[in-house]
Image 1: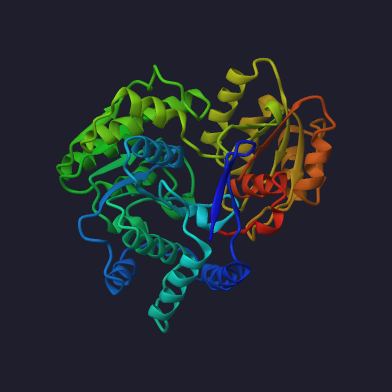
Image 2: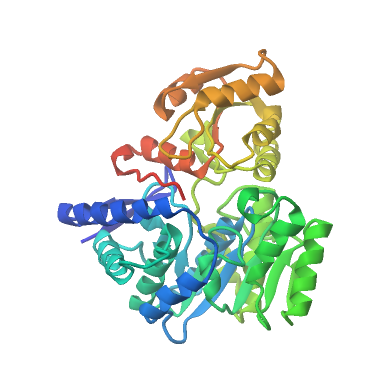
Length: 431
């Protein structure tokens, strides 16, 4: 039997008392699933629709809230989920990537999917898609497992966070009650396009005929794409123009007030009545680690910012939280990201840099990061290279500044696992 306990020190859920055989079966199932990452990312809906058809998904009558965007979509998803929980609605939640354990991606208001449940669902998928050409991708299979679990759990409402883009994302096979598009900026240019208009067009792909769409005021070229797409598809468009105020939030930063506003507006558009009790409890009790997460009495901050726009937001939040202070930064990133521009955005709050490797096949060697930093800012910038996150943390704590861990959600997750003494349970992933 699985028991869960909330760890206030990290904002994560501890997993205990799971039979060893369940963990062994889970490992075998996940080994197969992770091996499907070799098929890469194949944007498109045909294979996903075929897989859903084979599994008789979704459950009849299920209603969905679909979230796309560059930054903030995970936080908005978490706010919506927390608000629904406060309203006594036990909704499913599908997000990515995970921080420590794959099962974080598939949960409802009661619990995460168990190792035994996950193993059974993956084995079913493995048998279903034997010999398929093309083979379903890692993300398609993860989404199918989630949808199957939500069906088994009889969840009437499900919140879906897109993996990448929107138009050709596996989650876009669902027709939602309301769609949400968070802040759009540059990321995944190799897949989504090199201009904001191109990226916005991919994100706007979740807009469906007649389905309400909620967004916030965006850059003019992005806004043009969203309004035009909504008009062409007859989708009622609501634009959030003010952040949500008047209630304490469980996530820190001015940007989270905008994410909260998107969440509240989306639920209202979907027909939910937001009482004072629901707003107070739902916005405060939201649990979404690695988003300006303050640990060790605020001496250690973990943030998943991994692109320039998110880094700029992080710097503004840092100035708000710690005016006049700089940070000892532990930084790591993955290939395909604009790491140089991200580091340039963080430099104003950097007292020194600690570059570390972490468990991801896409992790950029720390020596390359140091070389890029020296090329960009000169050799006077204080930089150190570390073999792992543990040694980077020890070194960073020797400095008087607060420590900021940033650059990748994969790095953030591994650091959280290390801090909780659960490094053995950490499951790395390329997606």
